[in-house]
Amino acid sequence: MIIGEDKKIKAIVRKLGRDILVTESFQSEENYIQHGEITCYEHSLAVAYMCVYFARKFRLRLDLRSVVRGALLHDYFLYDWHDDEAWHRLHGYHHARTSLITASRDFPLNRIEKQIIYRHMFPLNITRFPNCKEVALVCATDKVCATIETIRRTKYDPILYEGLRLPIEKPMTERGGRRSSILRRDEKCHI
Figure (cartoon, rainbow, N blue to C red):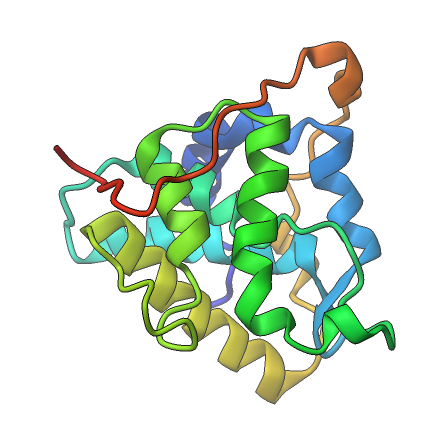
């Protein structure tokens, strides 16, 4: 299987994540390396794609819209963690919170999307256990994609971007990005 070859999966990602995919800020993730030569943008697209793939393959009943949006924004920290700065040394422990704050600033997020972003680094962040199936799916898929990217260390096939690289509609400053509160410690995915 080539990540990005299924047009139906890409249509689902495009439909459910369109408001994120068309922003200048999300597309700026192309400026930041995540694993090897893979950018945060490529990694986020791959995780969203694979989440939909696994959800369909295993017929998972979940909030697919929240999964796609959370997967697209799970590494939305918007800085190069490879820079030699002291505060980057613990990036693995802190970037989920930074991503949540940045995503909450730029996009309206529901409770599940916030949980996905905040808890996706389990088990490195041992206290942020996935507390619903949507979080567990993105968390596991993120680890699968990160492992592939770290071992392969080559770019994804350009087929991944066909249909997902959408033109920028408006910069976030013109979209009226919403500043929602960040996650409370006791907040759950489902009531």
